[in-house]
Image (cartoon, rainbow, N blue to C red; front, side, top):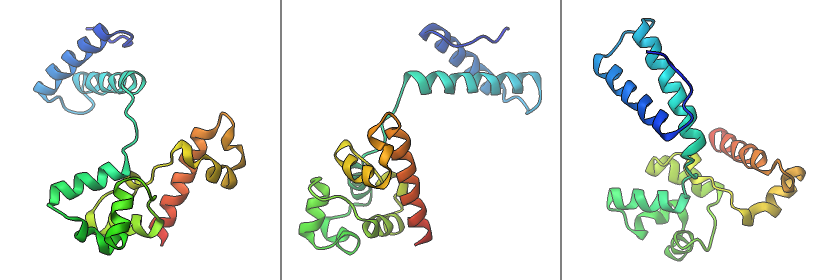
Length: 157
């Protein structure tokens, strides 16, 4: 069967069907079926990235999810965030997470630091002071650069 680009939902569904069938036979790497599986998966990933964009996770939702998972209370978050009033402010989005809070939440709760770093449009002035071109069309790149810079500080600190 010929491999072709995935341009429509019908193409996408057909590719998924082919991948499912190939996975069932579990082809070895570097075989015709194994290569076909690699190519189809790559095409599917490209189609999904273009048509099924997923927004970045909200840090507060990540914290709430971990609280629910572990049966944690506000009191349990105090060593990582501060007194209970500060925990409530963070959970109600009245106060942003600090670098120290991100470090502690990441190490204590196992939440990836990337999930706790989130720059919103409200943060544009502070981003602009760090990377002047952020108010231009490159602002998405600047968000990525700033988040990467913050992440590297987390890992080094």
